[in-house]
Each structure stands twice: as structure tokens, then as C-alpha cells.
Image 1: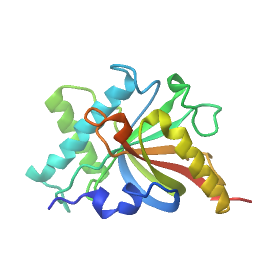
Image 2: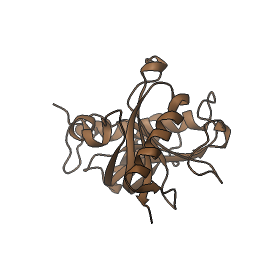
Image 3: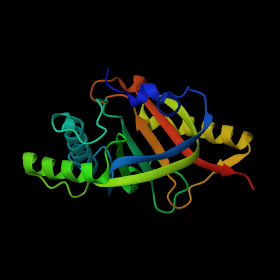
Image 4: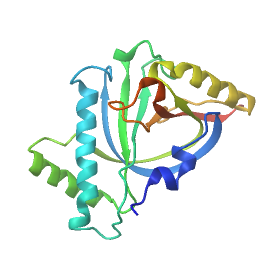
Length: 209
């Protein structure tokens, strides 16, 4: 059976629909940075996803010439960090102002050297420039999180409930340097009805002073 991060780390990928506190450890990711409306046809966001998945699946197919420690695995779900200049959290009504980092978690064997090889292989095979894809290490730390079910535009109600819960537990939101609104996309938006979309939402927090 291929290792499935969603099933093995349910705490991070399959939380309940009620808010909870979680501490997220350091992980390695594929990352592409950009800005603009994610819904724009053939915009920067959609191009970023194409690049991420091309490199992610190149690494997955390393089983033909496996690096040290390779194991069969399911490519983890797409994730996104979102922010806007001068905004505490995110303003869903201003999608054109979004700045984002799109992420796909890397398996533990995928070192920087494995990443570099995958970028070279993807470039040669697809004859495209993959220089925007980065190898990124990130320790997210203390967060409040919740499973949101429904359209992305309905997320503000879930986010408000998360903030209320965090404050009741003695925390406040913490959008300091390197801390962002975080979403993990468990549904294929091309095949899922909007009311059934499953999205893990995380917000960074700290103890109230």
C-alpha cells in the first residue's frame, strides 16, 4: 500500500468541523510564489499549480531510479498560504490583491538534491521552465484549524468561528512575519460540487499577552 499522508497524519489533514488547536512541525515542500486572483483563467495561480504538479509527479516516479530511502506514496494535497498587504488575515472580496504561496508537501526522502534532479528531469521532458518552483522548509507552529465544507466564498464564517474559539482558549491570531492564512484542499474542484468541497483552514495563533 502506498503511504498516504492524509490517512497517516489525520491530525493535520482530516480535522473535525469544529475548531481545534494544533502544533504543526517542520516539513519540506514544493513551493511557487505569486499574486493575483486565483480564479483568473490561465492566470499566474493556475500556471503555478501546473508547475507544482509536474515536479511533484516527477519525484513520485523516482521509483524507476529511486533515491536513498524512497517509498511508494500518494502525492499529498495542494496547500496554499494567502495574504494581502495591509490586511490582518484575508479579505475575500479583494481576490485580485491576493499574494500566495502554493505548496505540495514532499516525502521525507525528497532532499534538495532529489528536488534539483526532478526539476532538471521535468524541464527536459516537458521543455518548460520550472525555475519558479522552490524547495522550501517550513515549521508552521501553533495554529487553530478546522475542516470547512462548502464553497471557498463561504469560508469567512468558518474563519470567524475559529477566531472566536481561539480567543476563548486564551489565544489571539498571529499574522507576524512568516505566518499566514493556510488552506489545504482535499477535493478536486473540477469534479466536486461546491457545497461538498473539503478544505482544511488554519490560522496562526499565539498566547494572549
